[in-house]
Length: 229
Image (cartoon, rainbow, N blue to C red; front, side, top):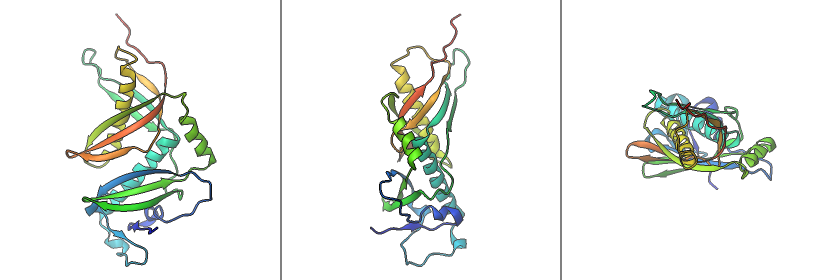
């Protein structure tokens, strides 16, 4: 297989090295994309531009993609803590949404690597892989159990810095809404719980916005309801 990598600076580049793991490891994979004009692809043995020549825009796009991938893989392994207060105009309640990773895989973790890079229709698709250790594999298996209900959702966010993660969070909220809508006809005051991705989030560009789709396993606390006057 031909292995190609992105040019960038320092620690970020180390993530894209080809690393061989022990047989029997079960890696998880996911794909994110950036606009093709933000990156330069080079193959092993080709001349690489000097580090100082890479643009700040390219470096920022790469760092953001790597951080979003680390966040998403962590969301599959460890899951998220979620607090959601739905909006209520009648009660003058503004919406609040807090989605925080329960834990993060280490920054620059050598177990995350690039599998392939593909240019297509003006986009660069980066297929990434993370090889969990035995403890992380147990966490993955735990979240995969049928004891936790599953739900899917899609969300969108305007294209700007951080928009990929914003769209994914919007999709998480929609997955919760879809699950709760058919189980509780009254608007809850607050939803709390944990959730984890069953698969790596999918993203695309739709009418100038980032669109994300997710499937979750959820462990929700009893809903906090409004007190009836």
